[in-house]
Image 1 (tube, one colour):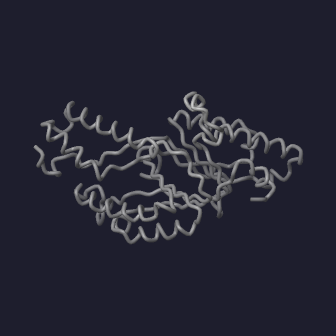
Image 2 (cartoon, rainbow, N blue to C red):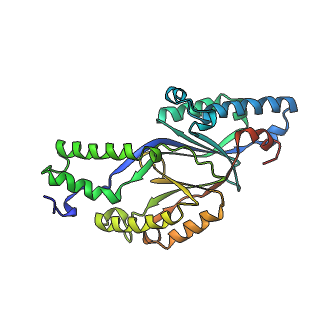
Length: 292
């Protein structure tokens, strides 16, 4: 069975899923803020910083037993000052579930500073690792054992393989928000037009293209941290892409180079791009006074 043609396997690549993600993009009501008395502004800002610090790092009993210091906890909420007309602030949240993300929304809504926020955009997704490189090997291993595709034995074999992959990739599936100075976020789709339909391309050809596509990203691995999240059935696009770097020009260089790659040049559609500068929570008070 080891030589079973790939065409006989399911066309869908396997994926690993990790943290649930929420991006929030806010416009700040500066006019209303300036009308608030100075002492009240200071109080509201202090409350906001305290609330955000409570969301920023994940505290667990296991970590406490390990004696981790505050700065060693994984960063699961990060704040950015947004450039351009699309908004003023960006919040990026990583959580263990969508219920936890919903609680984040509710917690923020209880703060007084939220009265000055207008949510202009949001994005819901889940951290995803695509397995084009290993899907074929996993399917072939199941077929080699004589399991019929989608049979209970097949499904158990696939589930066991995904469990091993999840354990090995835990740090990538459940990441801390990178500490880089700049972040760039954009959503994307694969085309489904008559002229170019990614989902009708044979698996082996998609695997080849994704391999070459991935090589470009790896060349930038020392200067860009990339987190891909899947959003099919969760939001308006199919994937979200987060890029983190110390130099924002690197975003342009990476994305520009990828545009020449076949996967992007022929089969990709891109949504709006959002760019932010990391805003440490202790500097939020200064930001509210017009100081970055």
